[in-house]
Image (cartoon, rainbow, N blue to C red; front, side, top):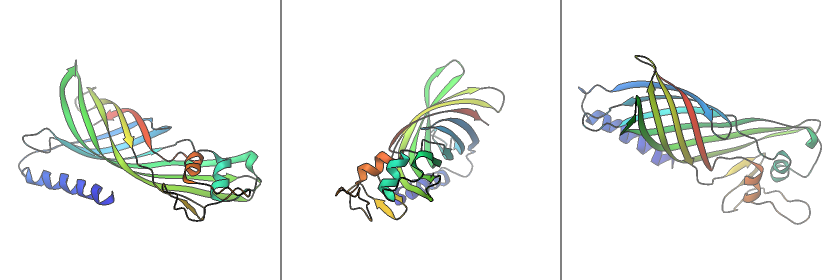
Length: 228
């Protein structure tokens, strides 16, 4: 997947060069906030009309979402041990840092001053949630890198000469991947490393790790902001 993402970026850059140095591309920036399994912010840098004959655009964005942390008690059992000290006061922090790369294309249909674009491309996300069990003298991070694809619909409405309002709806899909915490790693095929057990003969599985966390899998995204 890393190679595919790199290839995608190279193709876009190469195509932009081939399209001709005399062609003027339109640069824009987006600042947005909204919901991505929790409060989310994102900044995007892009170009529209990168080809002289086809109205394609390309953009790259970086966002952060304060997503729900998951089940702290189960996370402790799956990734560390069966101790209970501090379980009555579990403190968590963290979320998802995500990188988006899109190709954009304008739709012919408009509603008054609002123009619509479809967008889509690869996604990279880094899930990192820290658990601290107050009074239990234990804390650890649960982390996971996820790679996938996403897309959606964006509406643009002029607010001024160089400023537009933006509303976009999207959906991202990340195939299941490994989840690491403390010194235990769980894999989708359950070829796990240092998987914990419940002390009664049961060894925790990847499904348990998924239940203990909120690692991105299928996520809708609703964002609004400004383009300038």
